[in-house]
Length: 210
Image (tube, rainbow, N blue to C red; front, side, top):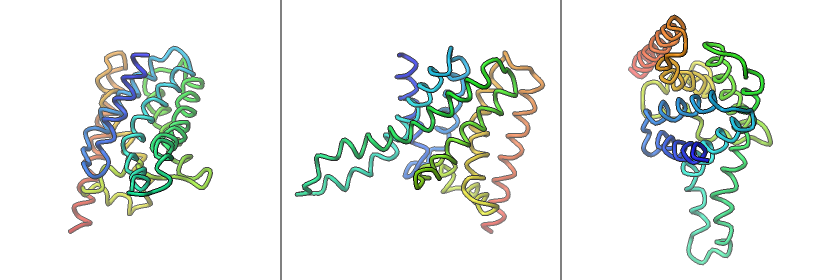
């Protein structure tokens, strides 16, 4: 229960990466913590609950403004405010629950760089699914954290899902390279590749804007 509460709080903190604050370090802290906790989860269900709690905090706070329309003076539907600010985050968090649980189920006995890659894919598929299934709700993708930086220009190479995918990989990197249980060579490879692509993305953005 302590980890579930912690992940809810971390998810809420991660919402600071979205507008209007766009505090991008929050993405690195948030997703790295989620990766660490799900990696140590004893079961697929527990991993799913960790993902659900994290997303509930993330979407609960980053989408809380949606309910503001129901608080307009003399609005007869004010009673629906709790549903608006909690119902949507719960539905969106079910996607994270599903893919985190599946990741743990499939890669339960995997270690090292395979776990890193598979978890990155799980989060990428989570956002793709919620952005397209049931009419789709592609709001607050992790890639939007770069909206006020040159890195946002990477989306012009394909779309927001390209930027979102590499943002997830970048954000998970700190947790991986700081884990001494992983092989030194794999940590160096992941760290170097993430650093190079991050610098390249920033440089590309600056050149494109100029």
